[in-house]
Image: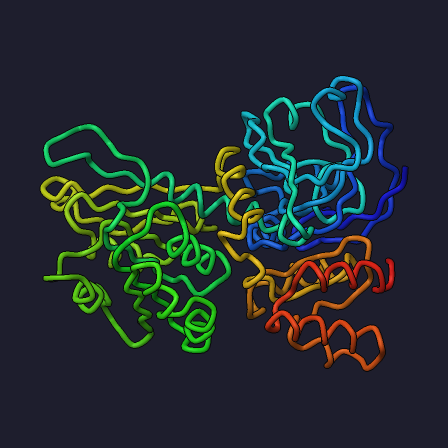
Length: 420
């Protein structure tokens, strides 16, 4: 079977290729990819190529398919998996498939990746429980399961002492505590805000910081102070752009300058880590969420506070399968509204160019429809690309859903957009 896919051949060398997939084996599964969501991690793979931890050294002769946030339909099931998987079911994939070298779909393999029309899943993916059934209303929301699972994993990985001078840890964010999400004005930060407001454990105070007022305004619009109050949360947005040290004003957002029980750092910035440590309360936990490209990245940490205030630090890189299942449940039940971060759509033909431009592009997640030929465009600016009946009807659907992408918009798009 032939497929089209965007493959990484070397540093900055992304190509839309057409090639033959190998014949599926009895311990494999053939899937049809419908959507993929572009991720900054793919940009890191593009710019680092063979130097990236998850990218093989032989990509010049064996290029890999990019994209790890994908959703689609199971087309054919090998004999080994006939009792566990059913043709026609929707699926999502947990990229952390348990390989010892850290290799993952979307980074490391020739025939498995999200920026492809078809893919062949090898046995380890299923053996690790990484092929998950998904019953959501849309494919694009399925492609946002993986990024949401990263945030779910970060919240789950937090820990605090059960009580003072007790070595027993309580996992997860501190319920009824103070939380700060630093540098949270990108799509992952938005998901963190949503989870803090609507997840099973909620803080009493939530402070969200950013350095660009337009992005903070977008966050305020999507996740309002009024909605937070309904959840029993005091939500405070702070622009730290002109602050040399934001730790003092942020601590003042907490009662008696107590500080924060949970701090999440959503940008790999040394000063943000240093100042994030300063706002930790007793037994506070700082999560370094955003992965740096610099292998020597480091920051100053106050070990006096580590010793006397029991502050501690963790880092999470993606979620595990249980986090993924939790994310699926949140999306299927409408607890988390991931459509808020789906700000752009495009076809497979636009993946290479858009991936290269990701750091410069504004907005949230860019959703790829792998069967389609379509330029990358903001959902609420569809009318700017052309004037025809298809676009006009699509615009009306988007307006109907408060200018957000939706299952209805997706269904119309899949039926009417030009195929690649």
